[in-house]
Length: 341
Image (cartoon, rainbow, N blue to C red; front, side, top):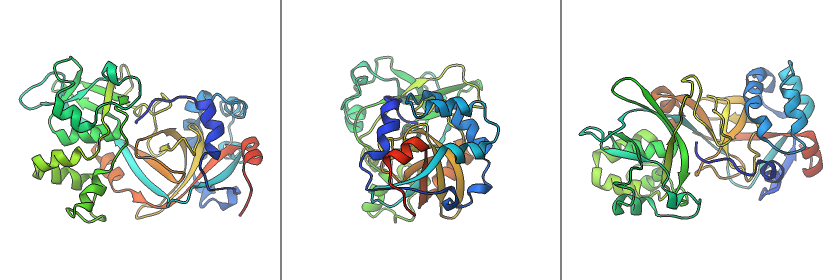
């Protein structure tokens, strides 16, 4: 989704102490429906990125994970469930990999580009805002267009998701992934839509935003520019269609097993137990394998729902509370965190 990985060793060790107001070691019996999950499925996902956590407390566990057969016993023997809270309410949302019609060259139908990362924005610092990029024509005519889409609002949501599949007229597919951003913070267009009185907070969804922007093209483009963050893409070559998009750990993410988190609190690569409430409760062991500009806070997570329209509809309905518990190696949990009920 959404960002390149960096300094995993530091993140894995420091995230649990950065800014958290309360950290408690729990027991596995405290986790709702823990015994009912498919721990083997979670272990398979954990194995894909565990070797990328370059920290001494994780290395022996990653080696053991490659050989262990009893997944539940593995997690219970070598990890501690840790509840990390920072005083803000838990919020769980969903994201997905869009599949959109498009073209490699501009046509009468496909007129809205997605761009490669320009050299002047490659340093990771603050660059031009979304409005400045779109209104100033700073990217036009430079050969940075990666593909062309039919609808500017789909360009916007592709940037929010950070990856996607673009189906061409000949049936072939371009897979695109996150290459960089302009350095501006993410601002929620849905919150702004509600603030302007154009929709109630309970009505705001991706579909609401799409419909309003399409019905109001001029004001709609101005609304989208409320979010100054702008994402650039790269083409992903030779990826199996069965695999999910590339996450922040440079590995494919897995539907309903991968989550995007705030690495200031949750180490990338760590298993996390998610207790999502709402209309469709979810109790599942997942792996923190992605990040996102809107994903900030100790109890904030974005669940990857898969690829295509159905996944998008499911992801768009999720805005729920609950609880997220991080599984940390025993050495880290017992050394750094107080225990409690």
